[in-house]
Amino acid sequence: MMIVLRSFLFQAAYWLTSIFFTLGAVPLLLLPSRKPLMLWILGYTRSMCFWMRVLAGVRIRVAGKERLPDGPCIIAAKHQSWGDGFLMFSQFYDLAFVTGDHLEDFPLVGGILKKMGAIVVDNCGGAYARARLVDRDLETARAQNRRILIYPEGALAPVGQQYRYKKGVFHMYEAYGCAVAPVATNLGLRWPQQSWRLTPGEAVIEFLDPIEPGLDKETFMARLEAAIERRSIELLGEETPDGVDIGALLPDPRSQAR
Image (cartoon, rainbow, N blue to C red):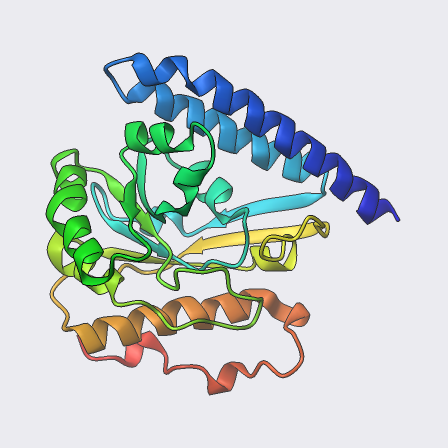
């Protein structure tokens, strides 16, 4: 009963905070600089993390951030929860990110995404959308020396499961010419996918050893998937769902040839 009450309180705070920050972002769209909006987004995501902790009882722990390369890189993260973006954006001031064009359906969000410099991919665009991402949006992010967040699975995966990693992350890695930082998480234990109900406890996001540029597609994809999936399962600990066997996962990425 207490968990249900806390979840209701969090959802109320979630929507009120989202409406407040969305409306407050509108005047910032008129400014020539992106910086005020990015500071506003940082405040928004940190407010959400505050509500997660205070109302829902979800304690957030960030590990391995010191492993991130200095300067621009690609951050490739596990995607288990609607809250993943809040946790990740709360850690950075000016983070570019890859998202589908479905978010543009929400009022005002399209303009905010454009001002943020988000890399918006046409979900129905196929190879054309990928070329557009590399040729235009990625070049813009590189010129601005930004870190880029991408969720390689492209969808929210249930805890202990994974979807096929999309090859777009390799094309970004190849075109951007910089390291990729894998990120594991167990947030799905506390906020499963898009559920309204949150469960108190610790949520972890962990930055893993970067994958340096220069690998071929097969080696890169194998190392990225192995690193993220293996560590995400390990972070579940005693809460690992029945039927999930870590020994059946991909080989340890450290065993892959560079």
